[in-house]
Amino acid sequence: MASLSVHRLSKSFGSTRVLEEISFEVADGEFCVLLGPSGCGKTTVLRLIGGLEEATSGSISLGDQRIGHLPPRDRDVAFVFQSYALYPHMNVYENLSFSLRLRGLPKEEIRQRVIEAARLLDIERELERKPQQLSGGQRQRVAVGRAIVRQPKIFLFDEPLSNLDATLRASMRVEMARLHQRLRATVLYVTHDQAEAMTLADKIIVLDRGKNQQIGSPSAIFHEPVNTFVAGFVGSPRMNLIEGRLGSRAAVFQGEGLEIDLSGALGEGWGKYAGKPLTLGIRPEDLQVGDQQGARLQGTVEIVEDLGSDRFAHLRCGKIELVARMPGNVSLKTGETLELNVRAERFHLFYEGKRITR
Amino acid sequence: MKRSALILSGCFLIGIFSLVPFLWFILTSLKSPTEITAIPPRIIPSFLWGAYHTALVEHGLLRYMLNSAIVAGGTTLISVAIGSLAAYALARFRLRWTRWYLMLLLAVSMFPQIAIAGPVWRILNFLGWLNTYQGIIAAYIAINLPLAIWILTTFFKELPFEIEEAALTDGCTWLQALWHVVLPLAAPALFTAAILVFIHAWNEFFFALVILTYPARQTLPVGIALFPGEYTMPWGDIAAASTVATLPLIILTLFFQRRIVRGLSAGAVKG
Image (cartoon, rainbow over all chains, first blue to last red; front, side, top):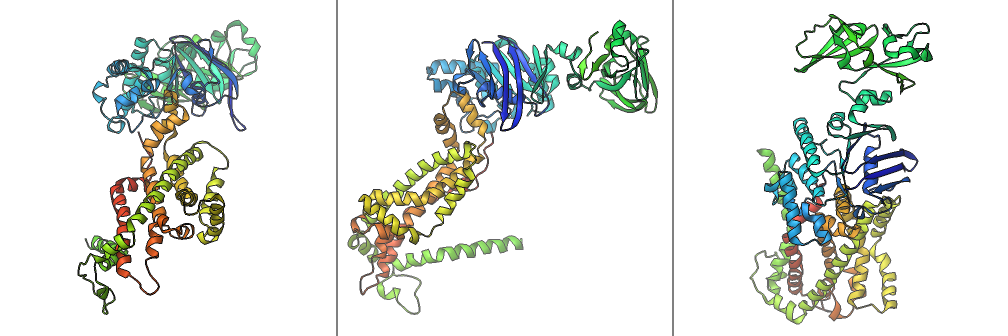
């Protein structure tokens, strides 16, 4: 295993700029996730590291070796494709052993590695079968197995779980985490699913439209998003983002039909933003019912989503729509007026899209 | 019920219609000379095998068969080999001119053979390749490559690129990826291209007539066409020779039938 270092990586396809000066590090044994919406360039980053595309500028180093100019076969990286890309004319054993046979390893060693990987992924019984005869989940495991047998310096996963149904995805997520624990592999994992990112990653790199938005631990990304994009992208349901203006004489935030006292949240330094337009962010789970502390909000319940363990209440406060998350046993009725509280430390404030620190 | 009966009978009729010429000359090959020219035409022959004997022994049919086999076989192997390399490059490397190139190939293949027969003869004459295997094979490769490239390019485009990328990451060079992954998957298309080129080369008459003038080197179509003497038209011998000439093609096609159907329907490979 080795560490990965990407420095000012840029990529253009013709005149379209797809990646803009991306820089990050992945430490040895770290599980790093590239997270972002479709089209943000995260798969392109992965393909550049894997050698399937050539960078327009910037450098990529694995260990202390520059690999940017090397063909895929010489980079010692293993790529797991979104569509698995298994060899249809070979059975599972041949699929798994292909790379090792190419390298000319002795038969006994090949056999050992393949059986070990198959055992780890619970596909030992499928070794004689062809990919067409396997289920989606099994194919996915063969794709991962193909990478494991190679014992590469880094694993590159391109949305490996997105082709699976929801239940399978959830259980495979746990398997991925277990696998990483056992192998202590260096992993760079691409996904648009923020739940996957949050549960699997040691470190998350959030990308949007080819640019790096934030790099940090899942906790940091969730609790301290640096801009409105990250704030809105991570967390389900989405963080409530309210546009408004801070009063000039008092630290009161005014949105459309909504007024919140932010003196507790902003503290002494609020004067800097007096009169300025701000974006206020409140996570649905921070809108509490019956908590007497913090700022107060009133809203009318319009729609209730009942998920059993949780309930999402879609409220209207003045002209603004808010989503609040409640435990499943709280009773809610459409048309009802709810009194909500938000604690001061739970507010997220953004000026010109960027986080204001307290 | 009625509709399928109608379709079935339609297929039957079309099948009979296509087979009639073939059946007719098989029957002719087994008739005596008087039976062949009889009026009204006799359908059931007397099952005389004399025509076959004449064709094989007196006309040297086996020599023609050998020549045809060498020429058609050589053309097929080389056309498919070069064609698959060209098709792979055209399908995979995103070049701006691939469409124009394919159009050009199509246009060139539509030239009437008579128009280019003269220049081809002159080139082969210059090279001293008239009446040689390499000469006729070279000419055949030239007229068959467009067909091979078209079939193979269309098929290669259907193969998902990710499988080759997986091979590249697993440690293949482009050629190794082609050999280990692409060609095995492209087998249906390769067989289709091979069979079509083989049939085309086996049946080709005009170039063979112009280029091969020594009986020792002539192929079946030319050989059989030269059966008629100044005064005689040995229909029986011609029919027998034609039957023998068509047999290898039928055997090959039946043998590779399943692969050809798969190749022609060029489905995308999923897995």
